[in-house]
Image 1 (tube, helix red, strand yellow):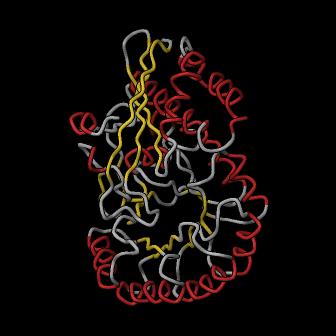
Image 2 (cartoon, one colour):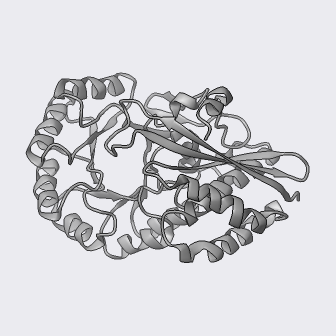
Length: 358
């Protein structure tokens, strides 16, 4: 088995358009990680930042993790992953696991390429397509008519589920907007509502009960991700499933939610939460805890991971970095299809990457 011979990173500041959702971010700081083995084969990984700190993640890869990983035999990567985690986990949340994620995705891409298999088949496919829900055509800035238009366009393209944003305009107005979309789409389309950690518990309880009456499929990130007890109370009393995870890192944080019955939909973000290695572990933890997974962001990568586990009902269509991809996710009859080429198959526009390089 070949060994890791070179690791190179690059930093790209990608501007975000009007469809950026509810986070308030205006750019995504994309860190690409290229891992080359001693036979010249290359794998591509990535991590990112929406609210700063990506430069520190890159520095951690370049100056702390690269020396540790060089020389690793590709089939011994799990042991090196654990060594990297042990070296960095005292740094806390926010930098260490995203750095390791970028490396892990690159190594898995490289291993799948060398095997001549799409990543999901290299990992062990449970199926060949996965349902996808529409998430990129709803922002707080849109009028009700624009929300309805965006949701209807997803349904016209064959999707049976859409996600709306809440938490920035006041609970009453948010419920009114969701109700208008529900009336326009009818009862057969699933609606998810993402609150981007903007609510307090009394407001979240008030809103959840009204969203339950509207048949909302899940209520996402209603409270700050550190407030597990608040999520537990909401899950118990609100009447609508609770989804969390884009701000959680690693299986241990997800396990805390499951132990407290604080969420039933887990949304790990592989480029931030441990890469492919940790995604598979979170899936196992979720299955044991009667929960499902629905990954955050980047369907072009996440489609492979969703197909490799038994408990992922949806991936998210959110075009955060579509502007620098030469090929975006293929959707057919409301399902996402993986590219049929070795590795994860992400295709970046090298000219635009160079334009946005820091």
